[in-house]
Length: 314
Ligand code: HEC
Ligand code: HEC
Image (cartoon, rainbow, N blue to C red; front, side, top):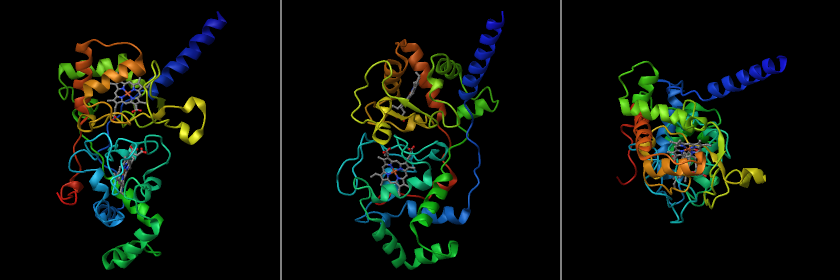
């Protein structure tokens, strides 16, 4: 008797904690930021001054007019050399628990300098960037108005990150539904949401970003034949081979191709890959289409702040 009682208590604790973890939460409609830092970060985000040959801005790979990413499996950097990972969107990245596919940096601020010095992205050196910015009267004045120490690596990272915080996309149909507008989703989409929960997608894709808050192995039931080792490169632990940050599914209808290597061109293909590698059981076509219908409801509104931003040369 007592043993049963203990077991049910244990189950209650475990089950309720899983349920709690598997919550989907709407994106807040506002986020607190320092407007002056945001304005400077915005200018820098779209300015090719950050790249080695002054041809690439952050916008070149993270097009804020469309999806905060690009549309190819792998992007070439300023040297023409190809990167190793599919570009993730910067939209809602502020809500990811770590940044990058392998989560090797903690937050947007730590992330911001890496693309500038990454040889397959902007291929610049930190020294050159800081010198170029200091040589610009406009940037010198703007930084000095905000910081006593003017242009530094940390201040540059801070303003870029502050701008990126504003890149949130609230009010998707699904968020409206979560907030109580039962008409925001049609029957197919509601059925897709139900399947997303019952099939177990929600065990990995959950929280405010419907992903972006935990790591998981890509290829649980079958080897996913990934060339990248993921977290293993950082921890060197056998169990971290092929472990990646579970990506956010926010705006996923806009961010094809999918997976860290861009192997899936469509949402149908991406969901198929998930059922095969992550769930280990097939899904009938009808159910797959319902899940895709649901994923299509996760597209939010682009923020006002990006309306006048353009990619160089477009
Ligand atoms: C040449 C293309 C390119 C340029 C230019 C570029 N990025 Fe990226 N960005 C990428 C790729 C590829 C990744 C994924 C790399 C990885 O996970 O290892 C990425 C990842 C990110 C992430 C992490 C998102 C997530 O969900 O993990 C953020 C944030 C980001 N970039 C911001 C920036 C900023 C800020 C700039 C400008 C200073 C910039 N990027 C310039 C290609 C680019
Ligand atoms: C056990 C954890 C787990 C489960 C369950 C799971 N996923 Fe994933 N999902 C991941 C991981 C990890 C990735 C990234 C894989 C990679 O590229 O390395 C991913 C990637 C995706 C992508 C691609 C996103 C992008 O931007 O590239 C989509 C779409 C997706 N999952 C949808 C689903 C759906 C729908 C289900 C349920 C049918 C599901 N996932 C079940 C862990 C999971």
